[in-house]
Amino acid sequence: MKRIILSILIVLSANALAQDIDVKKSLSGFDKYMEKVLSDWNEPGAGVAIVYKDELVYVKGFGYRDYGNKLPVTENTLFQIASNTKLFTTVAAGMLVEEGIFKWDEPIKEAVPELEFYNDLLNNQVTLRDMLGHKTGISRHDMIWFQSDFSRKDLFDRIKYLEPSIPLRQDFIYNNLMYTAVGYSIELRTGKTWEKFLEEKIFAPLEMNNTVFSIEEMQKSEDYGVPYNEKRDTTTLYKIPLKEDGSAVGPAGSIITSLDDLSRWVIALINDGQYKGTEVIPKSIIKETLKPGIAFRNTELESKGYKERLNSTYGMARDIEIYKGNVLTKHGGAMPGFHSQVIILPYDEIGIITFSIGDQGASLGNTIIPYNLVDRLLGLEQTDWNGRRLKDHIEGKKLSKKARSKVGFDHVEGTSPSHAIENYVGAFSNEAYGEFVISHENDSLYFNFRKTILPLTHYHYNRFDTPNDENFGKWSLNFGVSPQGEINTCIISIDEGQVTFNKKVDESLASLEVLKQYIGKYKFAGFEFEVKLKNDQLAIIGTTDDLLIPYKKALFKVEKFDDLQIEFVMDNNKTVGLKYMTPSGVYECEKIK
Image (cartoon, rainbow, N blue to C red):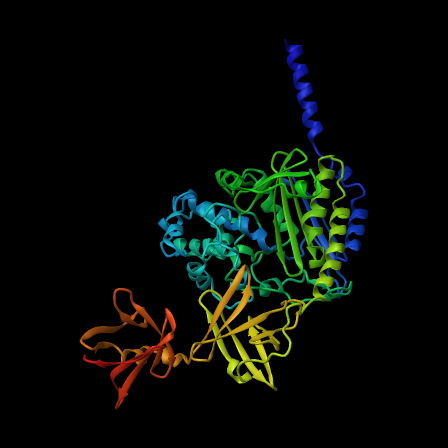
């Protein structure tokens, strides 16, 4: 019996040893591989870190963190990790679940009544897991926050304007604003900003001492990444501005960190939340993030016959898939000029972090390098990820150039604007997206939106287009005319649909002092009605209240009907009546009180 037990122990010991990874052997030829892929993709620089069990066993920079000054990528180079921030926010929210403040699967409004969704169905059903698992059915609407000056509260308050695109939990729709809302909810319930909460609960115990949240903080370091992209249709690299969308959207993507710092986070995730013998993340939270949520189609298998990556699902801030028979979790991150990927093989105790610079090589950082490393570390046959993705990339560049050459396919010649150019000038606003300004200078119109000013050229009728800007894209503005014959709206295709912006009037027309003078009771042919203030807006009170929109001095439009107007009649600065003006006639009403 002793011999049998000894034999079993020897076999088990041998199997355990066989499963250990010889990192140095696995990475034989990897440096040469990196040299090739960086060259193939015209990438200035990249960084790689590998965690095994509870150690950072490999970390190395390749190429340049600052291509122009030929400064190398190091283990301490700070990179914007963008959406790899989301798992930090999920874990932070999970800590409040552990405290009983939040719950994963009960309506979020029970814990955060301040949060308003588009309708009662969402208010009564959306859970924390829905928000963190991208299951709300609400489209991305990224241009609400992109390059905006909105505060985090502003974004939180705009959730109520976002109509769902599909029913709740029907499918996966990625949404940064949901993470922003969760981050602000943490602040509402703890009294600490999302940033402060992370610093105290996660960064400090993990000794992530070089991790920051803003470009300003990043630039205090002597070692940070500088983004360089390819000029469109060329291989010329040029420096692009560091993009920061402010602290508002932070919980969805503002963390800036290094390979060395981020490896500590990965160590904790691999080891059930433990770091250096101390529990930083409760194990139960990590398990919750890995629960399957929305399942994805096997599109690579269906469209190209690739069988490596199968049966992918999304948990919370983690994509879980079967890679060549192995369970793999991952999440990518992308900001202009920066790309990152964090892969964890939980049953193999392996973590892989990759950073890369340059949008032209987005596939390099999020697929090619990390999956090549998975193949190497698990001793699998190496799939030619580089060859596959490079072929698609080259073809895509050709097709994109061809597509841009066909601009103007719908142009109608011989038309002119319906109004004089100066009549298009003004501010236009939308409840969710904020406002933009049309200005007039040197006989040209200019579109000023989110700190970017682009010239407008008349296309046809009341449509004006911007140039196809390298970074901001091409915008088509379609102006609308009111029943009174005035420019009153502008429709722009943004994000997932057409967005209508209304031309703003002089803000003084909506001041409470001005509005109060119109309050009172009015009568017409024996019928009485009342004008009141409703949420600081003038309204005719009835079975259904008709809100009045300031238009000109003493003149209002009825919100529901653009062709109806209300004009208040003044005598010696006192309101004595109103005119209800419709296409069928003008009805004069007397003020009686």
